[in-house]
Image 1 (tube, rainbow, N blue to C red):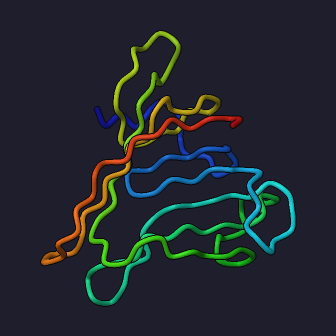
Image 2: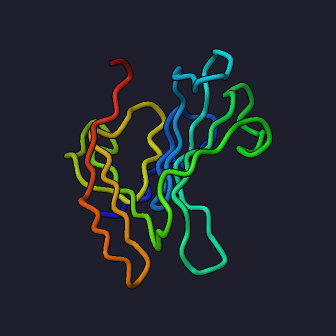
Amino acid sequence: PGSEGPHPPDPKRAFVGEPDRLSFVSSFVPQGEYGGLRRYEIGLDAAGSGSGRLVMKHRLALDAAVPMQLDGGSTALLDGVEALRVRYFGPLDQDAAPAWHDSWRHPVNLPLLVSVEVTFAQGDRRQWITLVAGPALAP
């Protein structure tokens, strides 16, 4: 489990998976925005109360060096989140068997599956069922 893989993170990659966030490029265009490839990032924005907000940020994917907050938008997905854990299933190289990893930094391939677990703030009665999805290059 938890292998960092043989490759350092590269923000120019179309898919970058970290233990507490993921970032990907998509042709999906939010309503009211102009077309083109966009980089999306899903992760936690910390709040002062100790719990955070699960957010999705986006910006045009023209320049990987431009910070997410400079030219895009942000959508709150869920409030009162204490922790986010993202895991990635797939082979890190062609000779390896698929396994679960805490990060995904493969230079070319997408993971076969992505698992998303949310922990709510203490005292919050909501329950999260682990979400597992297979990323795809086309619908």
